[in-house]
Amino acid sequence: MKQSANQAVNSVAVVGLGLIGGSFARDIRSSGFAGRIIGVDNNPAHAARARELRLVDDIATLADAVALADLIIVAVPVDVAERLLPRVLDGIGADQTVTDVCSTKETLLKAVRQHPRRERFVAGHPMAGTEHSGPDAALEGLFRDKVGIICNREESAPAAVALVEQLYEALGMRIEYLDGSRHDMHVAFVSHVSHAISYALALTVLEKERDERQIFNLASGGFSSTARLAKSSAAMWTPIFLANRDNVLSVLDTYLEKLGELRTAIADNDSQSLNALISAANDIRRVLQ
Amino acid sequence: MKQSANQAVNSVAVVGLGLIGGSFARDIRSSGFAGRIIGVDNNPAHAARARELRLVDDIATLADAVALADLIIVAVPVDVAERLLPRVLDGIGADQTVTDVCSTKETLLKAVRQHPRRERFVAGHPMAGTEHSGPDAALEGLFRDKVGIICNREESAPAAVALVEQLYEALGMRIEYLDGSRHDMHVAFVSHVSHAISYALALTVLEKERDERQIFNLASGGFSSTARLAKSSAAMWTPIFLANRDNVLSVLDTYLEKLGELRTAIADNDSQSLNALISAANDIRRVLQ
Image 1 (cartoon, rainbow over the protein chains, first blue to last red):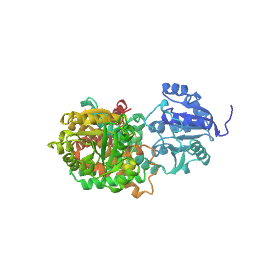
Image 2 (tube, one colour):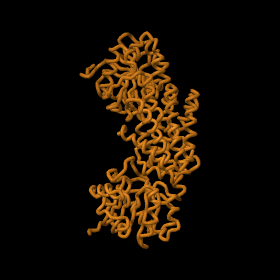
Image 3 (cartoon, one colour):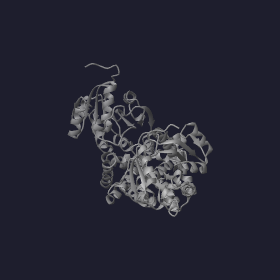
Image 4 (cartoon, rainbow over the protein chains, first blue to last red):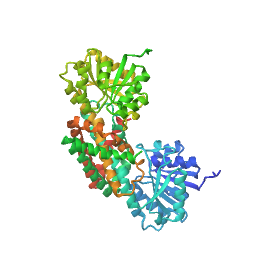
């Protein structure tokens, strides 16, 4: 097999060939990071489609992929990862590395804390995505210039961390290191609650739509920007909210308080307070380019 | 003065040279709809900047512009428009036409209902915008393929309606006709509540930021999509919420109920209900491309 100058490993296994796993596969191929990409998916249609799209070279069972690959990337919803990860670690040797891509880290870190191969696992969170899902949603360059977070680095073997760092760099990510619990709190703020409020908005408009022939012109006016995230799959997001339950509830409660303040100012016709709240919110211009 | 084949009127006055007024001026010029564009702004810096950007040919006082222009476009926040519009109608003759661009229509329609020149006013809402403001935010082509709503058409003179229709078409808008009260209810759903929830999200994250050195990576993870609208100016949005108070409160209450259902499912670790709610929200894919 011809070896690329950038080749870091002979083979990578991608477990879960959806938006994130498929996008990893695309960039691993184009960067030449691995000689061979093995795909695993428990949905035969997704596996076949990933093969058809040439995201992967071969489809294998989880056991075969774990036996073969130098690096195993677990890209499944977090509840599935909690069950899968200990099994994957059961199957690897001392030189193989396992990483994941999940949006919450604490429940996963807990699931493998006592595992004899724990140090071959690197907890990762490439912070990129879209509202679409499945192998057809896989995008080349999805991770470029995004942040890739590695959690609890000190619990992993330096060589395993180095390999995942090399992968993130090959995909163009900027690496940050965080403690798992701080990570989960941060993503509740910057991602999970955004999704919750988008789902609620979609439900609000869809309920209205039952009574009205059509809700016109959803594309302008701001709705589409806020409701876009509500397309994000239930299979991925249900377990995220539950795995990060305490942080999400805490941020949601602050959020409900703020929305309540806006509501009160509107209900009271209190132009001055409303203006002050909106002006304070406008300060987001400072941090959001 | 050279007359373009598309020229509908000799002169247009744009009152308020911000995002919407400035964008109108740009497209009026490029479409050749008017021979001359007169700008009015009570902020001298905005007026000077609009002149510098060549959005308008001249700057005039409101009285002069109203005396001169065939068509007067009032593009100011809705509370200012409520005070300004009767004065503008006081100053026009029987062949001049006035239109506005405000996001809420009922309070404006009420402000001019008994005016002797009422039928020279066409209540309009070009449904387009960005989160930016001021003359520098003016964009060419902002209205192309957007919906332009004309409210209570039957209260306006046919010739006045025809001129505004001609303007909307020159700017590439698709025209819809709505009763003012239905309009205001619809925009509460598709625009106003999206802004309210975005402001609340910005306030939530900014409060957190006071305690944390930095909230990392706001650009990915979904936050920026939902919080983008929170940059929208307080001067424009405070009066919108108050002018459309009853509709906004009613939609907000439905929204709070939906968000409450999501919160309860998360708090109860109720994976089945949470999945059902998110799956129902996913149905927004059907109406939102």
